[in-house]
Image (cartoon, rainbow, N blue to C red):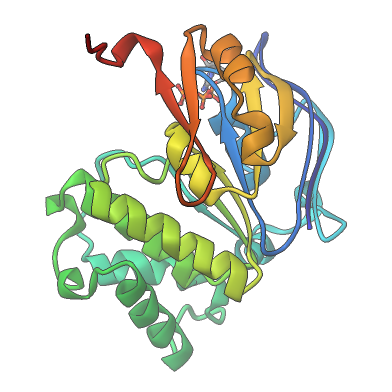
Amino acid sequence: MLKITNLTVAYGQNIAVQDISLEVIPGEILALIGPNGAGKTTLVRAVSGLVSPQSGQITVDDQAIADIPSGERARMLSVVPQARHMGGAFTVEQAVMMGRTAHMGWLGRECQDDRDAVKLALEQTNLKDFAHRSISKLSGGEQQRVLLARALAQSTPVLMLDEPTNHLDLQHQTSLLSLVRQLAQEKQLTVMMALHDLNLVSFVADQVALIVNGLLQCVGTPPEVLSSENISQAYQIPVDIVSHPRTGSPIIFPQGIVKERD
Ligand code: ATP
């Protein structure tokens, strides 16, 4: 289980998240939502060990993240960061193999398990045909899938994702989130994911944590958190919420962009 207790993270004098407590159990996806600058990425980075908390604790299966050596942490927790343009002379296959570093022996030689894990991750992310392409020459969406493949090859029980659907078209948004959903269930992965698209959150998340100005406003199931009152207040715009006709999941429409008809 991933447990965040009274977490506060600051950049110099600027407190980015304050006194946040959350729990995610294996098999569950927790979505972090909130306006720009709310603190979602900071939370993902803190759990990943990339920024140190000012106070509070993060544990995985009762082990404090801060006390786990980096190699062991990399076998426990993988991260799909926000895609930025990736340079370098690596092929897709080489970039995904980097996810296996923590599993390799001290000589850093890859073995059959590593090659199998990379092959599977390339298949799962629909990148098999891109294996020998240079990552620097891929589109933003293709690079985003390479970052997911690298994290999947890392084969960790905890998966953190920061805006993984940015740059992805409808088909790839759907296949990425279905894959994460499937892996959470089948492999009992613990997943925490920052997502802007509230309608995708509604379909994919088990729990939603709404953060505004670094503070946790509420946490609960999608219907509990994605209410018109919570969303209007957090994003400072009026919204309409309707139920999906088949699943009953909430669907959010910002009122400002709904075309009125006579
Ligand atoms: P977005 O939706 O825009 O990606 P976010 O919810 O992920 O935003 P964060 O990136 O976590 O928000 O930022 C939280 C706060 O911390 C913001 O006020 C931001 O300006 C500040 N911040 C983020 N990174 C840094 C940094 N490296 N140095 C100083 N302040 C930072």
